[in-house]
Amino acid sequence: TTMLWTRCILFLSILSFSAAARFGSSGRLFAAVTPRRAPVTATALAKSRSTDDILKLRGGAGPLDPSIVVKTASVIAGIQGLVLQFAPVDTSISYGLDEEGSRKPMNALAAAYYGTAIVTWAATAAYLCFVDNATAKGAFTLILCIWMYENLRNMLGKTTEKAGGSSDGVKTFLLIELLSLYGMTQTYSDTVLKILGVFFSLSGLHYILDPAGASKFYNKLEECDDIGKSQMQGIGYGILAQSLVFVAMSFLDYDGLRAVGLGSVSWFILHVYGIVSGKYDKLGILRNPMLFWLAFHAAVIYTTLF
Image 1: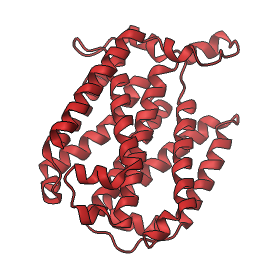
Image 2 (image 1 turned 45 degrees about the vertical axis):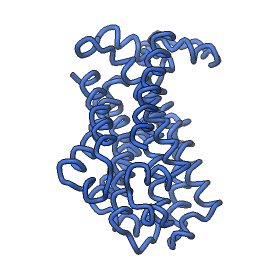
Image 3 (image 1 turned 180 degrees about the vertical axis):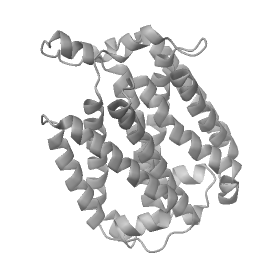
């Protein structure tokens, strides 16, 4: 299984780099299928410079083009997130987690949401890299839709109830997401984005610092074993990663690439702690895949922030 996983990763990496080199950093692939925007004023255009224009000015660390690195990272992380989201049990087992524990409804639920958190970070990175004149509001609207889909899937499938919890928290977040989507269309959308960036950052920290308490608070899930706690913490680091992107763009005036790099710091800390503390070894998680993801996010951080 480990060899197959390694070969898949190498194949996807080569494929992604080839695609990035072929289509370049101007987003021509998406421009071909995306309708043209209405003309904007010179001031608005200056404020919404594309990520690629910024990259031409700031370059990147060493010989690596940060645009290609992040585009490739978004593809690989997006595929991994989707696999975990839609096949949480099999994916957890492939990483070395106990089969019986992985099949518990609560742990499978947590793993699926962990996958969704990975997908939202990858989707944010992809949007900011591939789409011309990408904005923080556009990226946040995209991830709100992804979270809404997962929460609707949960609610309609009664996944939380099958795990012994309540869907009240899911319904509450659906309402927040709907109101947030509405807020993104209003004149006060910048303020809404800042508030949501802080709110979701705090929510992510809640899952990281008290995974059992967070699962009980949001989903009324009483029992949380070590696998469940680990998956919940993964959700927290993922929520924090995506939130840091928007906090950086809203409060620190970061361009899209630097903001994605800052979000990657959250993932990097997750894997450093898991390896150094021995948590991964205790859970039986295979070390090599985790070292890959550690190096993966280190590359994103190095090329975008330094």
